[in-house]
Image (cartoon, rainbow over the protein chains, first blue to last red):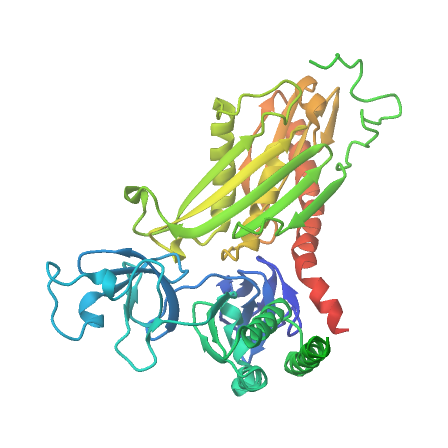
Length: 240
Length: 244
C-alpha cells in the first residue's frame, strides 16, 4: 500500500497519491483502488484518508454554514443573495420580519435593499434546490459597517489557525472584530480605517502564503512591524 | 499567401524552423494571468499565442439550458482578427464553431461535471496569433485554466499533433507543414488515465504511418505534460521560497 507523495507536497489534478487500502478524502477520487488528486493543492494523509487541501476552490453550500452575502435581487416574498457560490441563495421575507407581512403593504426594500450585506446561515440545500438562508439567530443579519475581503473558501481554516490561534491573534493585535464566512468572505470591523487596513493586509498575506508552515509566527511579527512603522509615521507627522 | 516552400525537410533531415522530426516547438506556459477570470492560462508554442479563460461554475443563462444532473460546459474558440496573415473577420466562422465543439469534447471527460448540477462552466479560448496546431495548444491552455479555476478534474489534458511532411512523420506541425504537408493528426490525452480524448486525422496516411503519427503525438503529449505541471506549480512556488 504505497503512497506516492509526502505530506504538504504540491499535487496537480490527476496525480496518483496512493494505492491500495486508502479512503479518498477531500478533493481526491478513487478508481481501481488508486487515489488521485482532483484539484491543485497540498497532499495530506490522515491515517487511511487521503486529502488534498486545495489552493483554489469555490464555495459549495453546506447546511449549517455561516456565510456572508450581498443582496442582488428583491422578489415578492424575499431576497436573492449572492453568496459567491454557483447557486444563488434565497432569504425569505417571513424569516426576517417577525410580524406577518403582506407583499401589498410591506416594502421589502426598507428592510434590505440591493447591495446590502448580510451574515446568514444556510438552513437547507441539496443538489436539486438552491440554498435557503436564515438570519433569525443572534449575530446574524444586516451588516452596517466594516470591510469585506474575499479568500478561497478552503483557506478559511488557515485564517482560523490551529484551535483558532491565528484568528485570536489577529483580533488581539489589530483590535478589529472579524467575522468569517464559510464561503470565503471575511468581514472586518475596527475602530478606525487604519486598523481595518492592517487586518486586511494580514488576511491577504495569509491567503498568499497559506501553504507555507510557521505562518502564525510570521504573521504576528509582520503585524508588530507594521504597527511600529505606523507609529513612527504618526509621530513624524505630529512633529512637523 | 506565403510563397510555396520547395522542401519542408532539407537534406540534413531538418524542418523549416530547424527542428528534427521528433522535436517540439519552443513552449512557454503561464497560469493565472487574468485577474478577472476564475482561472486562466497562456501558452506560446512556436508562433502560436493563445489565451484561455474559465468562468464558473455559475448560474446558467438562459435558464432553460441548465441540466438537472450535471454542469453545462460551454466553450468558445475564437481567433483574433489579427491572428493570421490576412485579416480574419471577428465573427465566428464555421471552422471556429467546429473547433469550439472539438475542444469542449476533448476536455469534457476530465471534468467532474456531475458534481455541480444546474450550473454552467464557460471556457473561452482566444487565439492571438496562429501558427498551426492551435487546437492542440488551445486544449493544453484550456485544461490549465480549468485546473487554475479550481474545477475538480480527473486529470489534466494534454494535446499534441503529428503529421506527414514530405515523406516523414513529424511531431507538432506548424502552419506551413499543416498546409503543404499531406496529413495532420491531432491527439489529446489524459496522461495519468492513459486515455485519449481527441483523435482526428486530416489527409492521407497508410495504416503504419498513422500508427507512427499517433505514437509520435503521444510522445509529444508526455513532454508537454511535464511543462503543464511545471506551470501549475510555478504559480505557488514563489511563496514557498519565501519560507526558506
